[in-house]
Structures are given as C-alpha cells and as structure tokens.
Length: 380
Image 1 (cartoon, rainbow, N blue to C red):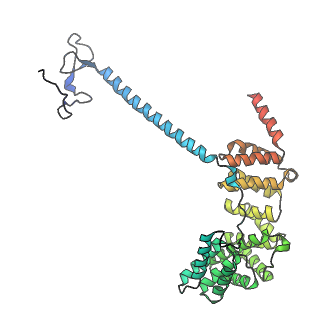
Image 2 (tube, rainbow, N blue to C red; image 1 turned 90 degrees about the vertical axis):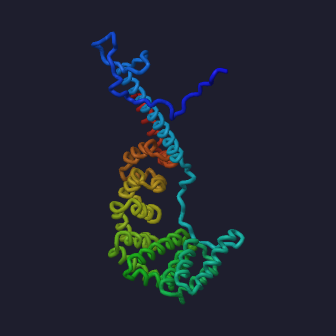
Image 3 (tube, one colour; image 1 turned 60 degrees about the horizontal axis):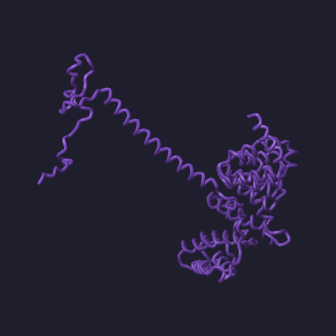
C-alpha cells in the first residue's frame, strides 16, 4: 500500500523571512553585472528584487483600497442613518402649548390616580424630605383635583418652611392664584436666595402662562396683583439677566401693554443666549403683539442660526403670524425672502424645510421664488 503523505503541520513548516535575508541575494550566473536576484534553495526559483518590491507595494495598495472601501461603506451607512434622523415628520414638531392643570377621573388613568393618592398621603409624612418631594411631584403632574389642592393648602399652612415654599409654588402652578398664594410668592421673591427666587419666578411664569391662555371672561382674579406688579418691576431692574427675564415674562402676562416690559424684552433680543431670546420673542409676538423690525429680524436670526430644532420651527410660525404686509411695512421683504429661499435647501431637517415651504406659500412668496429658480436653471 502506498504511503499517505500528509501536509506538514504549522509547527513543522519551514519559516520564511520577509524580506529575505541578504545571504539569499545572488547575481545570476550568466549575468555577472546584472541586478542581484533573490536565490532560494530550489535553484529554479529566482525572484528579482524589483518584482518583490512591486508585489509588496501591490499588497499594500490592495490593503489600502480595501480599507477605503470599508470606510466608504461606513460613511454611507452613517450618512443614511443621519438622513433618516433628519427626515423628522412635521407632526413631531407641532408647537406644544403650555400644559394646564386639570382634574383627573379615577377611571381615566388608574395608575396616575393611585400615584396622586400616594403623593397626597406623603404630604402628611413626618419626614420633611418626603413632604417636599411630594409637593414638587404634584406640581409636575399638573393635576388639580380637589383632594390634591386641599392637601397642598393644609401642608402650606402647617408644614416646615421648606415644604411651605414648595407647596405654595405648586399651588400656583396648579392654578390657585388667590391672595394667600401670591403673598407667599411675594415673600419668596423678596428673599436673598437667588436660586430659590429663580425657582419661584419660573413657577409663577408657568402659572401665569396657563392663566393668560384662558379667555378674559373666564379668568380668575390674581390675588394681590397690585402688590405683585411692583415686586416684579423691581426684579426686572435689579436682578440677574435670567431672573430679570423671568420677571419680565411674568409681568408681560399681567400687563401685556407695559412699555417697561416691551422695552426690556426688545433689549433681550440683542443679548444673551438664543433660548432666552426666544422666550422674549414668544412674549413679544404672541402675547404683546409687537411686530416691529427688531422683532422680525430676531425671528429671522432664530430661523437662521438657532441650534434648537423646535425654535427654528416656531420661528416659521411666527413669520406666518406677523404676515407679509407687516414685513413689507418694515422694509424686510427682501431679507425674509432670501433667508427663506436659503432655508428651503440648507435646513437639514425635512420637517423644518416643509414648514419653511408652507411659510413661503402663506406669505405669497412662492411665485417669486419659483421664477427665480427657473431663471437660475436657464442660466446654467
């Protein structure tokens, strides 16, 4: 029987060096003056060093090409992922109105109802931290059932100072703006603790936002409004920029025609963070109905350079609210047209591009824009 020759294992295979050691380089016997060849044990195998170099270069080139191909595939996948992210439907960007406090039926949401019961029970806890957390959580839930309001009013009268502060703030957020709550808030606004004052202003602004959203004939009277207004005016003048803005917004809901608030908010359009400028814009456009040139320019600035997607979307809605006539009256039609034209293709998010297109149509700028596009095509 003929022997079976098995292949050598990896441990028995002779090791090869790359590149070959200098001892292997020889001149061809018949060409003494030629470039050296690489000589192996098998005499019939000769490798020219140029060929060896070319093969190595070719392998490196293939490796690089493979890497580039993989990188391109990765970039393409990332690009497609980003494109999917950019194609955000407009329904996701509808401007959310300020959530108002409301009563809750037990059958409507049993879990939330159970949570409300647990939190109101926690208001009676002997632990101060638990009471404070319960009062804070009830403000976040924005449910103004009778038993919730009664529990908050009780703890606001009998609880520790820290809990009283949070209970009054929550009562305001839930729509209770009687004189007892307003007096407690005024007391908090007069204190020197900047952080606490800021929280109080934020809660008051949320409460007044919901209050102003109700029609005038159905609004409840804000208790001690006459005492609250001068406190807010003082805070506008003497507080930090963020607290001053919050105070101005609170006063704007109470006094929409206030020249002091209007002047302050117009100043805010030129300084501070973009998010703070947007707060000022909302008050000026939606509540105070100020449609001046600085306001329109600030809206265009938000649409052009705000990093917040929702703010860019809201800027398009503000332009529709102001309307073409007012934009023309301020001499800003050309600026508005050019910016909207750029945003129709520069804006990465589909929903905002759609909103821009709707704004163009609403402002009756679509025919002009289409003519311009056609003219550019003819030039090309």
